[in-house]
Image (cartoon, rainbow, N blue to C red):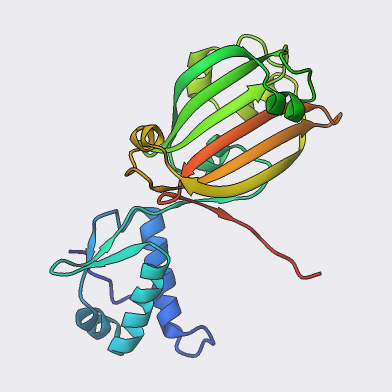
Length: 248
């Protein structure tokens, strides 16, 4: 049972609602690991007494985190922390870099590292002739020891020769491209969603038919050359994209 400290800094003169201040504190505790997955919180009455707040205020804070998928209420058990999602900004960065920078301990299992003849779609994305031999990388990416995504990437011939499985396990693809002299400049990306096939569910540790996020991305270097085409799937229960929107 995790006890909420009475020292949560609450600014009662702030325009930020008290429920949201409580929710933000608990959210930071979850994301930092202070509140690990499976941790059980005290009930609303106890939390309200500890913090000197009303029960409706605490209930609203809890519901905010339930709606964000960070807490779950179970009859007969109470309120528990669920596995926090990996939040990834939509920018020109690799999943490995994003996981490493946020302390998510990335790891990789290489499922395939081979050469294939480019299909019509792959050829179109990479700007090569159909049937051209391209490098195909198929990898399972983990975060904190848990499967998170399956990454399939196609590279044009001769871009970064001799990519060994051991190297792909230790570094992200964009790191390897940069170390090979490639200057990443821009990308065209499409994000979607679909349900997992039985094979995908087994690979990712999900239930059959679980929701998946999809991302197709073609990345270009500073000369406008397509340097990789990726088709990735992510566990929607563990992963989300973040976008910043500006008014026009």
